[in-house]
Length: 375
Image (cartoon, one colour):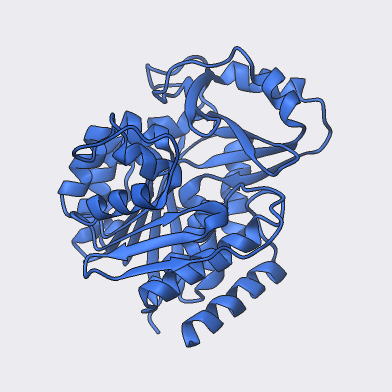
């Protein structure tokens, strides 16, 4: 079988994983909220969604952590999806498009990414001198502090740094013209010109293009960009979670006749998917412990139950779900099989700390997905 060329477009973020109590997380992070527009010197911050703190605040948070249980791993939504596809598909050649700084964090990121089966050749390396006028001080590679509480829930503080400087000129145009798949994380909507151009180039080869909405704050803050890229007809598959579905159909959302929605429910998720299917072929909503619901433009609907596992850390759960779903889709799985494969993959990663699964756990995922696809 000819190797499948897969590109991911997103932020190359090094995750700093820290375990501590919820009360400690709230105490450390109190008073650091700000706006919601990411830049080189400010970063999207997620407590269920995103607000902004400066890189200096991020550094101070790390120094203030009352725990020695800290580890780092190469992360970022698109990168996590690519790592999953590389682990599941021996015929996939995966590469990440994004920007790192010429620093130790960036170099370590590129090396670790390559070890996980994803090429770093398409990463742009930016000088630390901060040529970008919007940056303050030396440019650094992106980092995200992930505070994981005793229930496995995350609170994240991200400093985008060099990643926020990616431009259209950084895209590997000739390589993208050979792409079979382009997967973009929702944060790319903050740079819509880059996302649009990447999609245009990939589509010259008839590539499948998928988009993960990433956060309800992305949906809220990038309504115009999201609507524009969907209406372009270049997106084939969209991934969202229950909170993003809620934001789509809320009174302030982008679905027509939106209403006030206090919490996600089946009606809300269906309304969101139906709206997305005006523009794409397949839309799926992951629902945590409730599994997922998926629909396609031909009118098919599939619901999958989550496996009854104990969640230690939900970091990377949505991205690993996307890897399982996309892999099944690319090899011709039915909508139900794709949904089941996504849930099977997601169930494995929540049982460990962080988003990096070892070989044995990926082997279990491959076995489960192979069984699903054979049924």
